[in-house]
Picture (cartoon, rainbow, N blue to C red):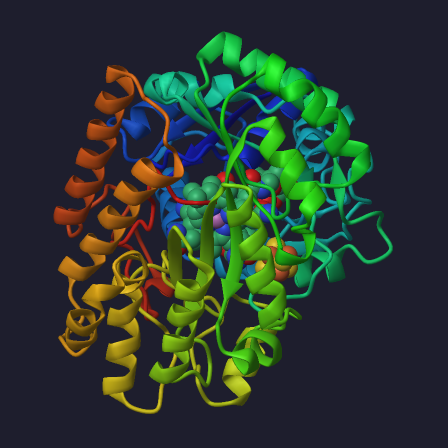
Length: 515
Ligand code: B12
Ligand code: SF4
């Protein structure tokens, strides 16, 4: 069966989930292709390929765009297909199926076995109503199935199918920066993150935290390096595995076989003399550590980080001691937060000597504990799925005054710059009073991109890489300026959930996003 993935944003960041699904489908004998919805002639391409399944992988926010694209394709394609949705949004907001009658099924949780099984059954004309992980619409009724056990051994999975992405956008293949995943799952319960929901959904269905073997990871990377080229690696694991069983072999083999500088995410409690020392030896140049908030109450009671200030400071000191670049993730605009608390987050970054402090505005994603907290405390009154496409622009929460909200939103845009240049703090403080505007959004995205390029990824990219960068920046700028330009799927029939507090203009996609 032919399965077509439709991807909306022109991001640099490889959609590893989608690539993993494509690999699983190919391994099961199906054919796959990817098209970007921003490229020309989408309808013509879809009609020429005539897939049996059109698949969308969606996070919250962009789901509205995918629903609209799907509605448009259902009405205009001129042939029947199964519209399949998966990814975080539908996993945590399964009502998406009821709200979108043009969608035939949603997959909750891991799709590695669920999607090939669906394609197998559709191809063979077999019943699809009882496939695990799926909520399927059939005969006007929704059939609900539980999730199957988690993939226990990640080594059994085929390597992510990069070809599907690079065929759709050949420049991406030649770009020197590539992302990899060594593991899946996180055992913590931070209230704003999807993991506590994922872990609840999968209770009793297997080990949550899994990693592939260091050998398999290095083999995968070697293939990518040989086939497409590789200069800098970003591991996007929630927490890069630092246990002996993985790290010893990784450190022994990575420098010789791959030898590219790399970046990873590590929680402060995994930062030890031994783990950082080994990572440095392997070629790690930068560690990204989430601080989230410098205010103890917000960090531990609201965000449920379970992490002391001392833990954060000593982890930062260890990372710096080993000569690694320290980047942090921070969230301001939390429920109940005021400007003074946001300033504490700024100050702890100064104390840590952070090289690059990425800052987000809290978004209460559907199903998360923090959404319930924000609603209970009267800070949030949004509809079920009314979250913006991006967390870079505005906060959906209420604060003690409109002026307080404005200051927090503006401070967010200046945060990373002020951490790098504290002498501009006075000026920054004055700027927090201005009317929120696109210039500040633009400034933040490009300032961050520049710093990441210069500080976090200190490798020499080729002329080609620069061309790709210029092209990508150009497309972002064009999107930004032509945000109002009508897409062919816009205005196609009922746009029921466009009525919420949403703007689809901000793609929130940065080629260098730290994830
Ligand atoms: C790398 C990453 C990025 C990258 C790449 C995104 C991508 N599309 O892959 C970049 C930097 C671009 C990014 C951007 C954003 N991200 Co992000 N990102 C991640 C991260 C850290 C890893 C993603 C990953 O590769 N996972 C591993 C793969 C194997 O899992 P997966 O993608 O979920 O896919 C599996 C299943 O979900 C399922 N599946 C997925 N799609 C489909 C489709 C079908 C048809 C089927 C059947 C199954 C299926 O099968 C896959 C294999 O098992 C996750 C956290 C995480 N650990 O997952 C956050 C995460 C996905 N991001 C998140 C967010 C909020 C964003 C942004 C909205 C932030 C912003 N800029 O404003 C944007 C949205 C961009 C977009 N349009 O999608 C949230 C989503 C929460 C939510 N409720 O939607 C997450 C979960 C982190 C969190 N805070 O909780 N992100
Ligand atoms: S530690 Fe990070 S990935 Fe894990 S639950 Fe908390 S925010 Fe999510």
